[in-house]
Length: 440
Image (cartoon, helix red, strand yellow):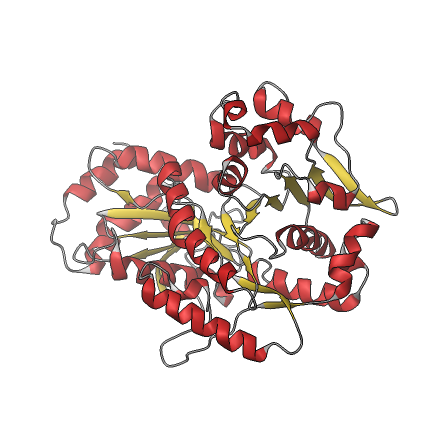
């Protein structure tokens, strides 16, 4: 009997109304981990994460002197199980389980963990950790005897082939919030943290390409979009500062502007899905892939969001429409994209304030009132998308902010990221990287 067949047998032995979580752990979750390639010496129950005990943790034993069952440290995968009486398909119980597995993955004893699973033997979802980001690696899947083997194959393939890059689209469908500035300075900042970064200028205006001073090669992004046979490596250029490579870039080319015409887009194979496929071969060559795209919710921005794991949303506290538009991105555009992709992604990271003046506390208070109004009006807006530190009993409404320094806007004329011109700017963008991406 194969492990998958054994798992199916165990699944069928659990009552459809089983209310005891321990039964699900023993009769489904443990056999599931075994079907995913972990043996009994590589699985530990009730692992102490440093933020509570997770039901199961697993890690391959590569050293005979370091058996995970006996020496439970440096887990690779965590699994949190619930009884079948707990609805993990949707609603508050599902959201609570997601928050739980996220907190475990980010806990102090789980720095090495890359994957998290939530399941109740009716539903299952795989989550991936990249630095401080935890995002879906699959949709929330319904489990049956007929599909459990294909689910196991899919999960095992992902778990055994962890992709190096996190793909981030910086987007708000409101202009003037500093999307391009954020991409350039975040890319340069990640370089200072030892990360290898690729920037994709997917805006027909090409502000990012112009700010970097990089020009397209003989083969262009537009040609690559139209012809899937072209090797994507042929269009990657490098931005250098005084001869030192800082980050790689796929620059905008003049022909890209033709794709603002919907008739021209018809010649792009797979339409808005094409960019995701195009950068797929690069996902194991970089730590971060940052996508810059325009404001309007048309081909370019739809493609950028579709290609991303997560969406980083800049706003301005003195521009209430940027907050309303951010809410629209969160409640309409991202769910629309997720329904199309059907793999759980992308998801929104908490919004942040860009270009904050030193005398803007009253403006931020007004912005928080607007956010509260949005949350009450749009029940689908999770307040954590704006106030990530807000908790019951601790109504912390702080939002990460980047100050308004003149050097940030003027640096583009010198074709030098502002983080390399002013130490204060670098420190703020390093704080941004730590807040959202890098687990230090």
